[in-house]
Length: 89
Image (cartoon, rainbow, N blue to C red; front, side, top):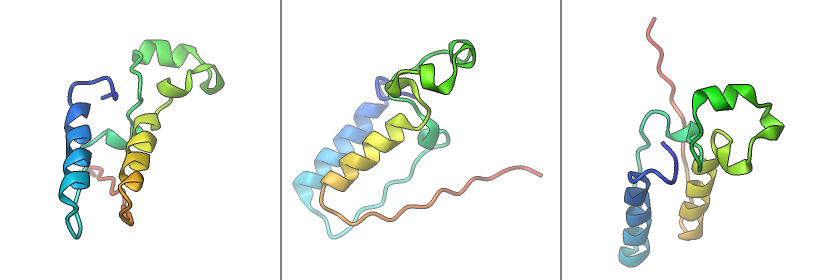
């Protein structure tokens, strides 16, 4: 998923509701892959041809997560999050 993905509009709307409603707290659950999402999608094959420093900052894995966390921080709430990665054994 990238920020250009239509599903990203849901996050924008969630942040708008937080700003409008100003609840005491909120919970946001990320989906698998959210933490590694790029702001601008490029194909896997394009990505592996480039070194990390050759990628545009918006193409770097995690760039969308960083932007969205900054938007959450801009709401004025204290943030706490953890990343649980599950693997099958």
